[in-house]
Length: 131
Image (cartoon, rainbow, N blue to C red; front, side, top):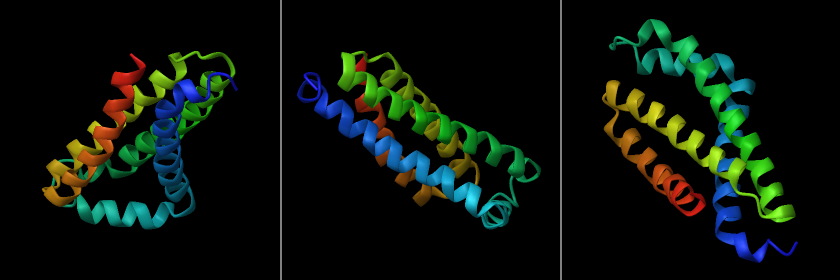
């Protein structure tokens, strides 16, 4: 626990990532049909319309891996002060958010794209602090 106070900012950012990404991944798992239906409507007038199920699987996998890496990252920060896995979690979170941002922009959901910006700022702060 000697590292807890030294890494409190990083731990809080990783907790944010865990809550955001694992909840989103669990929502996709528990309401697969609802998510597919909504996204098919969301992308119906775009070149991504036929790719919705594939895109949802990719995002689901990335969200779950990101959340798991954040959990492992917190444990490593607290136990031995190692930042590598925490950094990987933040980088993967940033990549996932960029993918989501791309989708929102393609769908011309500019309000949704703007919302992602807030998440991205927190994640990039994590990348900056941990690198």
